[in-house]
Image 1 (cartoon, helix red, strand yellow):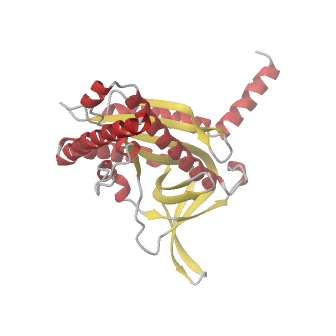
Image 2 (cartoon, rainbow, N blue to C red; image 1 turned 135 degrees about the horizontal axis):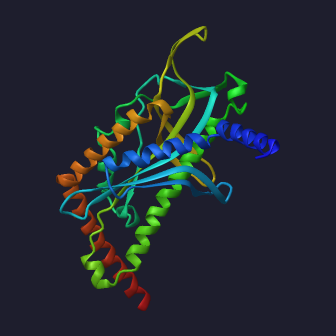
Image 3 (tube, rainbow, N blue to C red; image 1 turned 60 degrees about the vertical axis):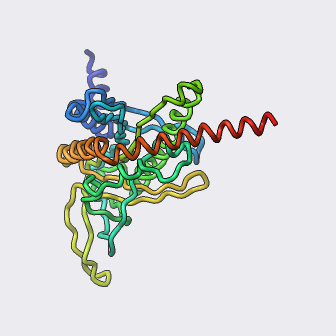
Length: 310
C-alpha cells in the first residue's frame, strides 16, 4: 500500500468516524441482537426511505425496526415499529425545558379500522395503555440546541429541530403506507373470502432520536437570572408538526446512546404489555369491532354498487 493511499484511507476513516454512520451501525447491530427477546420475526433495516410531502422527494430514515408481537392460539398481531434517526454530535448540547404543567402524550397507531372509518377504534386502547413506557417518562414540548465545542460539531444549532421534523414526516408516511397495505389486502379478496376475513393487525409507531452529545433538563428558572440544569439521557418530546402537507402530533423519544440498553428493556416490557392486552378482553373487543366494521363495509360497498347500477 502506497503512502498516498494510506493517507487517503486515514483521512477517510477520520471523516467516517466524525459522521453519524458509526452510530447507526452500533445501534442497528445492538437492536438486531436484542430484538430476539421479543420476536424471532423482527426486521432491522438501515437507510430506509420515506416520502417528504413538503418537498415531494424521498428522504432517508437511518434505521427502521419492525417487531411483530403475536398472541398464541390466535392470529392477533401488534406490529411495534421503531423509526430511528441517529445524531453523532459530541460537541453539541440539547437542552429541554421542564413542562410547567402535565403534558398529555399522543402515541400514533393505526389498524384496518382507520381504513374503514369505523368508530370506536379499539386499536387506540392498545397504544394508550398506562403501563407503556412513554406514559412513565418525563415529557416536554420545549427544547433548544447549543454548540459547545466546534471540533465535535457540524456547527449547526438546528439538528434537533431537523431530526424531529424528519421523524414526524417518516411516521406520517408509515401510517399512510400501513393503511395502503390494508386497503390492497381487502381489494385482493373475493366476496366469500371477505366474509371469513379476520384482520387482527394493529400498528404502533415509536419515533426515536438517538444522540451522541450532551443532554440537559432545564428547570427552576428564576426571572431569567438562574436555573437548574440537570444532565439527562432520556426524555419524551411531544411534537406537533403542521405544514401545507402535514398535521401530526406525536411523542418522540430523545435518547442518549448510553441509555439504549436500558431503553430497550422498556421496549421488551411494552411488548409484554401489548401481548397481554391481545389475550384479554381488549383483544377480544378489538376482534369483535373488526368483524362488525367489515360487515358494515361490505354492506356499504353492496349498497354503493347497487346505486351505480341503477
